Length: 542
Image (cartoon, rainbow, N blue to C red; front, side, top):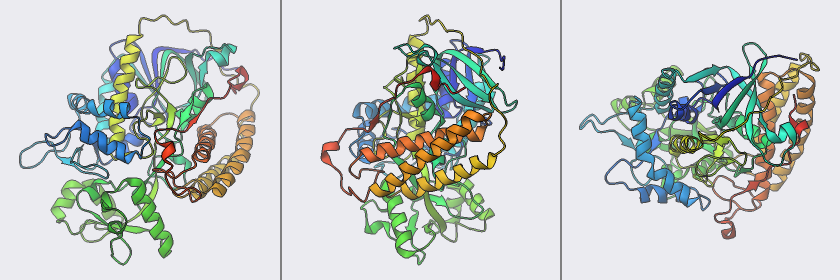
């Protein structure tokens, strides 16, 4: 038995990207805030976001236009109230970032903020910091958080399970009191207790063999919430970014959609365009259409990649607008001012997630979910470009405001037992974890990827169940490790993705199936929901 003392805070935030750090800053004046980061603070999807943040900032733009564009991209599944709420708070969110020190790019002529255009948008409304917007936002927020004495940062902590009343005593009501987390530095499992817990763990794109996301995007928050008794929604909608760099030495490097927004064109290996043949918006069509078209062209021609060409623009324009991409490609021998960029689609964004209301509240009292881990209803069947960071900021504020309104509420936190590792041993078969990792990601890519079918989903479901049995046996008998915890979470999220996909008997947005190739109008506005299973005390697998 490990007798680690519990760490007691007013708020525990699991995740250190834009959503988590924004929540921490919004609540820093109230009490003790703990932020758990699975890796170093800069590591996460926010840091790698290139394009920018969608917001109504130009006098020629309007909230209605942004709302209409988002609803169109969401293919009839967006929650209109949520879309209107998010967009109407977009300027406020950007001003908050600027007040906290984020430096956005400006036009050279009039020094106004430069706004670019991306797929699905009818106006230039993407505010950005060159092509490293996420890096600028992340590093600025990290510095702001470090300056707050009320916020304590716990780096290299991997969440294992949420602790709720149902897990403690089988009570009918459910309140989230804490979390078990693996200290990756010491290898010990520690207990964190709190009156409020916020999941800001990001998405689950690491479930796929090819992804633009960093390794930490392993669906942890979705799995944590599901095991705690939360419902999930719309997990069949996984966005595949159309343009990730295709190169043997480039892992997970995204080529921002802003290149297409500034005139870049998609071409076949022979240099001919193809997007203008399939959609009136050509390269700026919604991402699901662009990704599916690229995938189709690759399979039709039997080639490994397509190409993105912006070399018809001046070298000064390219290096000025996309300095990071230019340098990265040049280091690999690709001069984007003179030649096209080899690209492939890759898993990029999880549009579904933990079901929350407009304040970020989940089904479990005291537990919130913010950012990519959550399903707010903003994205529907397809996320429009650069609405993701906006969602993080707007719902971080919404969740913080709801917590603030409940701050005086008394919550009696029960005694939580320390993690019991007395009946497990160190693994002698770590290779099993790595083999299961590879098998899961490959089967999800092959069977639950850009194009699906009933037969593919059935095959995925059968193999996922076998993997779950193997992983559970491994989890019960050996000490937890970071790789094992991530695999345990991803296989659970994979099961939920397949379950959602099998419930949707149509093709809509990012979910395209050969067996139901058309949209079913009867499904307009109806999300896919997987209700929580019954939670028993024995489910706390410590």
